[in-house]
Image (cartoon, rainbow, N blue to C red; front, side):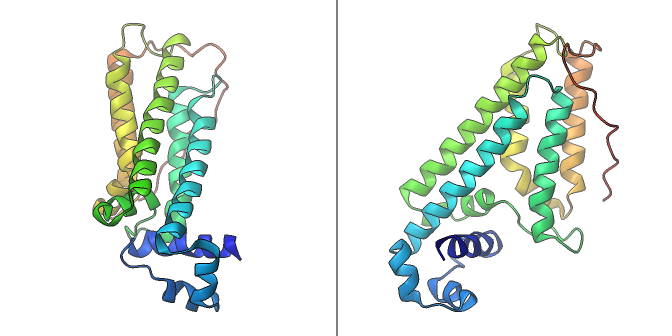
Length: 215
């Protein structure tokens, strides 16, 4: 029951934000009582804090696998990041591009003034984790010979981490997922033009041709 409650709450938070979710609505969807929700989580804040912790942990675990992989190129890391975003986007935009929210963290940031200090701390620390993981990925690209040794790594990290951080806002404001794909491609192409070596990184696995993003 705890997992059902958290899963349902996560979906409602993405759709309606922190202020738009109530114990009454959750209990009606799950055909249970509000007393049962209080029993498991105490109050709404306790429930949302646990939901956000789980979401942040799962996101960081996924990005850790992507960005610390020494065998993949920087482009492959970005492709994997985009595919992960697409999975989440499709869950809330199943019938095509609608621009519906899909990122729990982006949705909650819009209600920041209503969040508990713990929720705000989770959001902030997760953003820092994003940047740390991207820093590892960029460093690996330099060490593998994919990017020049004089590439301004921190500047590149800021650009890439910011896209990860605001990916949900990009698709929401544009109304389509393709805009996020275009932003990644434009940014990576600029970085490769300025600092790429044109060499295949040592140890990089051959990857299939990139599919064109339909928008």
